[in-house]
Image (cartoon, rainbow, N blue to C red):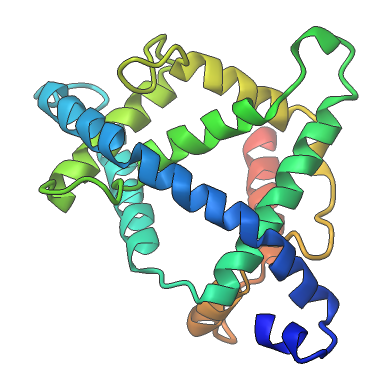
Length: 234
């Protein structure tokens, strides 16, 4: 695109947005590099303190379900290859979503505790801890990394009043309260704005699994609502 601009060619709107987002991407890469060593150290420390699951626990079945789902998310994210253009498009969409989320937060009456960028960073950080192995985790197997993910997921589900990583003042319970706030706002139920639907590559991946027999999202939601109605009347 730089060559096109230098040659005096006009860029379309999408190309202009991609050009404008380059400084943001460069800043994110620098930030990831800065966090590489502390993240690796923190993960290694956490792996050494993760307790083994208690035998005969009443929550054993649900714990297996959590690990089963985390395995899908973990490896699905690991094997997903983004194209350069898709990466930039995703970044633009994420910026728009963050802006929309914070804007919707202004409608709350208690303006003392408005949502800020750091709140969204915390939600994203916990999601990464519960679903992915840090790229800087040298020498850590996928098995151990997935066990660490499950540990973070358990702390999240129990709203633990523990720091999300050593040395942090942010707790799982605090992040849960922020996410609860987001899901109680109009942002959660507002229709998606064009261009904020996420990566185009995800649609391409979904097309690989689509079939004439596959139910649409609306059909799936209708089936879930019908099931709930039957349970309520039963």
